[in-house]
Image 1 (cartoon, rainbow, N blue to C red):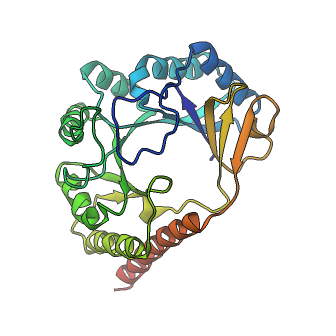
Image 2: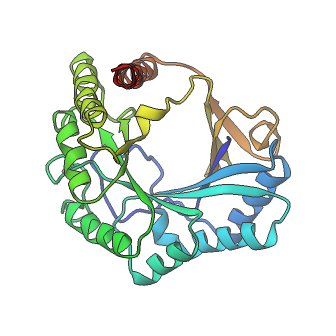
Length: 295
């Protein structure tokens, strides 16, 4: 299913040391956002798709997120959004937000957090303080209100040795859904990293198959993003990114003359390396599951 990214702000309350975002200042008006949504829907090749909110830190514009959600769900009956994902650093949460999320379960909260406090040291506020404690406080609010959420770990050269340990740590805190990504733009990965990535996730895989963590869901164990999925950056006339797409649609908004669109079709040595390690981890887990069923 096609995923479209809606930007509500490029501003952020953090200063993560590996941040890949070049634009950290752009702001958006509701007029700009609504115009993008209308064009997205107008040229959609399917009447059902997924929406992701990105930043910056999108929760800084929580009012816009609600506005997008209400506009599509209540006013645009000609399209169906299967679900919405708020990709957030997890530092902004209160009871009022939790109540809204509880009442609107199509809004999924996806927190970027790199594991325990040691693994999370590159994710810092502007004053240099590790975000770990604040995010854990907010996770407790989500859990208290029985709200669905997941954790996305960004792995890199300096925390990869903590990966399995971090996953088990988060599980011990009640986190049941975890995805694992790899740094791409701001840090070079190497063969040692790749080997450790596979080794660490093999440890997690074996624990799940053995029944130690039966209700732990690791996204990478169930699905690998196809190579043919193309990420496109959709820019207005000033060059500001107003949205993104990643999927395989042909004649959607990314192929029209409405915006300036950059489609990232070129495979690089780094992207090939990342695909290889992710596919290896997925295959290894599937083999373990098959062996388990045959016992």
